[in-house]
Length: 262
Image (cartoon, rainbow, N blue to C red; front, side, top):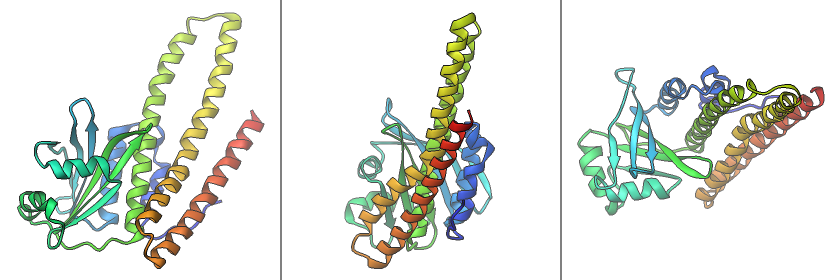
């Protein structure tokens, strides 16, 4: 069973069926995802910045420009460049900067980046994987942007998809190593490994198919906290939370059926 989603969110939700996502082709999937985010949010430019903890910097590995309709690699953002921005990127789930009236502490970034590049609004959302900061999605507009709950939900969904794709990539690497190990075994040991593989496959389905609605539910809870004072936003987010809970229930039912068939 599928449940209705807002027309702005629908394009990004369709990417849950992407072969690149399912196959763990991370770079190819990012080339699919980043333009969809940009177009869904009517943005000028969207990029994904990978957080490299060993260097303590964000590296833009995929950037899409709506005017040229082309993707490119971006430059690294080091802590020394804009220390206050860098700090917020690492600490805040989501934040939005408007070049006309943002807080004084972000003035350096507004002047040196937004105004210099003739942007009016800028936003980011964190991407987490395995309980650590994995990167951020950054979005830029040449006009002032008033965020809606659906805009934030698009970004929340994108973070979940990125995390899922990376999980699938790691899974492929694990499978490759596992096949090499099994090929060297014989008899009873080989049968035990086949059983372990089947159990592993079920665990992977659980992680891969259930992670999306679960991740979205957790992110929606964060968005509810951010919009706590707005009754309209609160009600809208609760409705979306109910939909995602139903989607999670559907995924669990499918998983149970697969186990019974095996």
